[in-house]
Amino acid sequence: MITWMQTHKKWLIITIWIATIAFVGAGFVGWGAYSYGKKEDTVAKVKDTEIRIKDVQRIYNQLFTQLNQALGGRLDEATAKKFGLDKLAFQKALQNAVLMQFAKDNGIYVTEKDVKNFLASIPEYREKGNIKLEKDKFEALKKEILINKILEALNLPPHKITEDTVASLFLMKDKVEVKIIKAPKIEVTENELKEFWEKNKEKYKSNTTFEIGYYYVPLNFQATESELRDYYDEHKQNYTDKDGKILSFEKAKEKVKIDLSASKTKRDAIITMKKLKKNELNFKIANNILLENKIIPPLYMQKLIQTKFLKPVLTKKGWLIAKLIKINKPEILSFDKAKLFVKSDLINEKRKKELIKLSEKKLKSFKGINLGFIGKNDIQKVANKLDLSIDNATIFEKELFNSQIPNGYVLLPINNPKESILFKISEQKLLDKKEYNKNKQIIKLSAYKVKEDTFQNNLMKILMKIYQSDIKVYMKI
Image: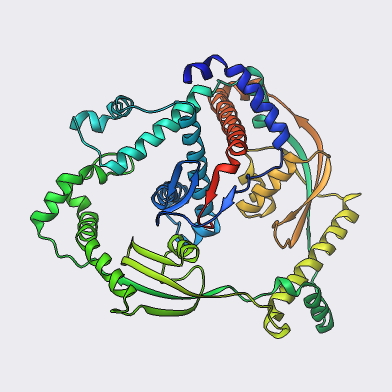
C-alpha cells in the first residue's frame, strides 16, 4: 500500500486539495455515535482501534511539556485547561486512531525491525545496547512510527511558488499611520439591567454540580533500598529525561518509589473496591462539587460522569475508586444572583457598540502617529511605540496584515474591547531581495511547514469523513 501511495502521490494531493475547498470552515467533524464503552479505560473507538485514557494522557503530557517550556516553566493545570489542552489531546488521540485504522484497512503495519531500526538511530540506545522496552512503551512507539510512516509516504516537498508566497508574506511591510481611541465611560440603569436579564436569562444559570462517593487507597508500601534498585533495573527504560536519556537511579528514585508502591498496592485497591460494592466499607461523600474540583482529576471526573462508576485508577493521591450518586442540573439564576454578571455583560456590550460608532466616525479623517514601515516581525516595535501589551500588539499586527482595505480599525482586546486603533496604510513593500537572502533558510523551513501542515490537515479531513460513522465516543471532553 505504501508503494501504491508513493506512486500515486500526485493524484492523492489533487484529491486532498479539492477536499480543502469543500471543507473550508467545516471545523472538526462530528462524532459518529455516543454510547457507553465496554472497557473501563476506553474513551473512544474508531472501528476496531481503541483509544485508552493512557493514550490521551500521554499526548496531554507531551503538549503540557511543550507549552510549559514555551512559557518558561510557568504553566499550571488551571492555565492548561483554559488553553483547552485536554480537548487538544483528545482530538489528537482521535486523529491518531483514525490514521492507525486507515493503516489497518490498507495493510500498512510496523514490524519489530522498524522499531529496532528507529531505536538504533537514538544514541542512548546505541550506547546501552539491547534494551528491552516495556509492552506499553513498545506499543506506543509502534503507533508513533506507523503514523509517521503514513504521513512521510504521502507528503511532498514545497513548490517554488509556495516558497515565494511565504517569502512575500514573511517579508511584506506596510507604511502605517495609527490613532488610538479610548472607549467612553458607560453607565447603566436598574431598569436596563432588568430588561437585559429578561432577554438573556437563559445565559445566567447555576453550574452543573455532582454528588459523588469516592475512596482513595494510599500508595503506602514501604520499599527497601534493595527493592527499589531491583525495580529500577527491571524498568529503567521508563525513566528518561526530555532528551530520551535514561536517568540514573538517584535521579529517578522518587518516581521509582511511586511506581513500585502503585504496583504493590493495586491488589489492595481491587479488594477495597469489592468491599465498597458490598457495603463492607463506606465511600466518602462529596456534595455539590463542580466538574473541576480538588477531589478527582478532570479526566477521571469526566469518565465517572459517563460510566457512573470508576474502578481503581492511579492518581497522585493513590488508587481512586468512585461512584456517581446524583447530577444537579443548572437552574436559571434570579435577577439578584445574576446582577453582577448581567451588569458586566451589558456594560461590555454598550461599550463595544459606542467604540465601533466612534471608530467609524473618526476613521474618515484622522491624523495620528506615523509608524513608518512595519512587518510581521515588528510586534515589539509596535508595542513600544503605542504602549501596548505584547498580546494586543500581536492582535493588532495580525488584523492589520489580514486587512483587505487600506483604512480600518482594530478593537482591543478582542473580548470586551476598551480601545480602538485606527489605521491607514499608505504604501506597501512586498519582497526585498536583500532580506530574502538573509532569511532564506527560515523561509524554506516555513514553506515546508506550511505545506506539511496543510497536507496533514486536509488528509485528516478526508479520513475523518471516511471514518465518521465508525467513530464511537464513550466520554465527553
